[in-house]
Length: 551
Image (cartoon, rainbow, N blue to C red; front, side):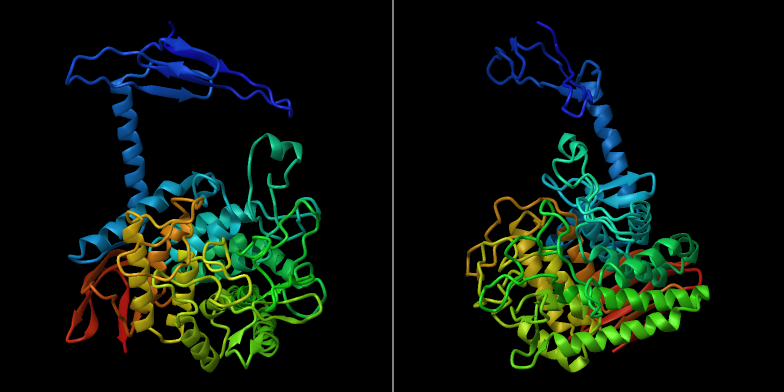
C-alpha cells in the first residue's frame, strides 16, 4: 500500500486546476478517494507516532526528523514576529503576563508578511484573510508598541484602493477595501468578496490611522508616498461617501449581493429605531462620523507638515462635522447619542456602544463625553465581563446575538480608550480587569465575541458558539486598554513619551515596558503602585527621547 496519496487535481468551474497531495510516515491499511485508514498492533505501554504531510503538488516522505526541522522553522518565524516592537510585562502577576503573552502570540500568528509589509488577517477559522477595518483597528491597538504593523496595513490598503465605480463590488474611486477573498466562487462572481468595498467606515479609518501613525513615528517618508492615496480617500469622503450632500458619511448597498449594513456592526438586524423598525437608507452611522472627524483632523495636521495649502480647509471641515454631529445625533432626554440617522434624517434612537467609538475619536464635548461615560458604566452596558454592544432593555436586545447585546473585546477596548481620552482612568482600570477576567475563562485567548449575560458568582462568561478564535482585534484589545489606563501617548516629532495620571487594574501593582522606540531613541518604563498612586520611572534610555509624567 503506498504511503502517499496521489496529487488531487480538481479543475474548478473557473477552469483553474488546484492541486494538493498527502503523504504518511506509515502506509495506510486502506486508502480511498476521501479516506485513509491505519491499523497498528502495539504492545502494552508502547506508542507510535504517525506523521502526515500535505503539499501543493508534491510531498516528501514525512518522518520525525522532517517534523522537528519544520517545527524549529515555525518557532523561529514566530520569535522574529514577537521581537517586533516593545515588550509589556505585568510584574509578578503570572496570570496577567500569560494574557499579555498569549495576546501577543495571537497577533503574531495572524500576521502575514505580504510584499507590502506585515498585515494582520482578521481571524480563524472564518476570516483568515485581509479585512480593511479589522486590519486598521488592530494596527491602531498595537501602534504604540509596534508601529511597523500600521505601516504594513496602510501600504497594503493603498495598493488595493478602488479606482472605478462598480455596484457589484460596491466600489467607487478612492474607497478603501473592506475585504478580499480567493477561491472559485469569488473568481466566478458568485459572491462579491474577491475584492469588496462594502464598508462605509474603512476609508475614513484609513486616513485617521495614517495621521496617528505620523504622530507616533514622524515617518513622513511613508506619509508622502501615501499622500496621493490619502487625497483620493478624502475625495471619496467628500463625494461618494456623502450621497445626499448633508455633510455626513452614509451608506446604502449598491447591489443586493452586498452587505445590507456596512459599519462594523454589519449583521442585518444591528441598526434599528427605538421601536425595533429597520431604517430606510441611506444610513449615517454615529461612529462613522467620528472616524470622518478624525480623518479630516489628521489630513489637516499632515497637510500642515507637508505644506499642503488645503490644511486649513480640512481643519474647518472637521469642526463643521463636529458641530453637525452634536446637533443632529445628541438625545438630551437619553443623555446619549443616537446610533444613526436614517434616510429621512430621523434619529435611530437605539442606545448602543457605537458612542464609545465617538469618544475614542475625541469628537464630543467634555460634558457630553462625561454623560456618555456615566451611562456606559451602568448595568445597562456592563455585563461584568465587558461592555455590551447594545444597552439592556433596548428593542432587539439579546445577549446571545451577534451585535445586539453581546460583548466584543475590541468594542469595549475602544470605548475604554475613549473614556480615558477624556480623563477617566479608574473606570478604565475596572473594565480592563473585567476583560482580564473574561480572558482567564477562555484560557487567556479572547474570542471575537461572547454572550452578554450578566456576570454571576462562580459562573464563567458564555461563549458565542461560532466566534473566531483567535481574532486579531480581540487579541489587540489588551494593548489598547493598557495604553489607555496608563495615560500613555507618544509624539515622535518631539521625541516625547507622555504619561498622564496613570492607573493599574486591581491585582496588578507593577508593570514594565521595555524597548519602546521613539524616533531614533529607545526607553524602558517601569510603573508601580505606591501609597495608593501609580508612578512611572524611566529605566534604560538611549537617544533623544524624554519622559513627561503629569497628574
